Length: 456
Ligand SMILES: *Cc1c(COP(=O)(O)O)cnc(C)c1O
Image (cartoon, rainbow, N blue to C red; front, side):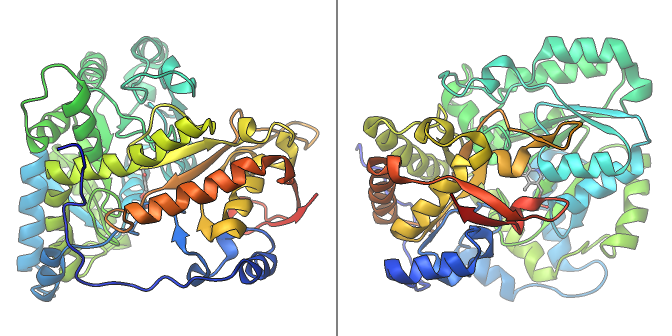
């Protein structure tokens, strides 16, 4: 059997509005050429993010009806706690409304000004929460991870030598904890090997520094380990996940990713003292420790979603959708980041539009062209999002100009992807006509969400 099918039947449908090209051009103009400002209804295939955009299963929907909405000690909480413990083996479980709330509690409790937190690559909310405490978020990604052309299995790995140097230099005084992000979202969803996680744990343990896992895509990472790391082909994804978490002293999670739910998160840890401190802040910010920021029905849906993410057939299908698009783009000669990540395909906008310089934002050119061609919404990950300013206030472009097409879980079928490939092909064939853009309005922070663009 070579054909991988979606391992589900569809019981509920949600209509997609099909706009004409003229309507899309009109909508983009009204959105000041920034797809973040479009109405979702005007997007036929929405690949803005895989966060909270997935479809729930019949079991999840059924469980929601069983949600126990008691303020304290609800049955739904017990189910949630038991499931998180079963997967992670970690003692204390604190539910939060999403991942960044877990990060905020972690950072506010443990970090002081000038502290350093190493990670393979910090996700942007993780970085923001660390920097908000006056601490430094340090990326120690391996060299392969920075090379978009190199084909390697575990490009999310941390550079162990760099970690050793960092610890030698700063020691446990300045480093309250170390993190590892699985899979590496900012680095294209590239996985981290078990060996690397084990080594990180070994290195930090010598300094008594705890390891915190950013576990948002733990199940996708477990799948990559199962497929590509020697010694893991016979293990279940649950066993692999358990081993990954066995090296962690704590973890943060966004259940909008591998929790297969539309909202939710958690913070977990083994240390009793940490747990007490986290709980105090949780009560202040999120809610009573047996519901955090969530309804009982959310806790039920997440408990099931976490286990569904670990089903092997689901991960085979999930990965097949990503590689299906990826392989065809390679065949067409469209420049993409190699290899395919866990949750997204990245177009290399710099190579796609060599005639558009960084300061005219080639990523925006492609994103807008995909929208006009076919109502596809992707996102620029390049100089609009990440440019720095030099001392004269001039922009230093981002080292990479990318467009991310992120895959919602269990939402789109193969024909949607065939359509997507057609739209990208169309853009690729007319790439010389795709213009650059200039920014006509921008806010002070996080400009990509709300800035306005004008075609050059
Ligand atoms: C999404 C994400 C977060 C933050 O979670 P939210 O639920 O969006 O707050 C943190 N880390 C990584 C790696 C993520 O992908």
